[in-house]
Image (cartoon, rainbow, N blue to C red; front, side, top):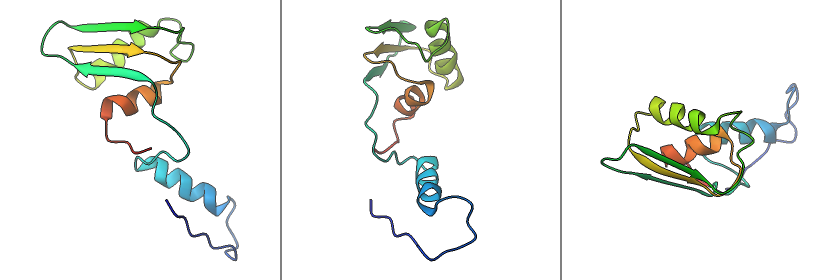
Length: 102
């Protein structure tokens, strides 16, 4: 991604680069990041199977319940989910959506 910045633009309270990065983040482009190491596969039956190889500190006191609530919000009732890193809820939602570019 090539960003062209206007160094002479005055009157901006924020840095022009920060504004562009925030706008790209909003439309689904993740600059200088890599996808979270989460395995997510939808299944036809079997309900939600949740596993984690690391402690999930960013999901609150009950990570399994949080994952179930997020999947329910996105109308996913049958899936296999495996966390291999301590990811945030936003990173998990990015994996569910599947339309983010890194």
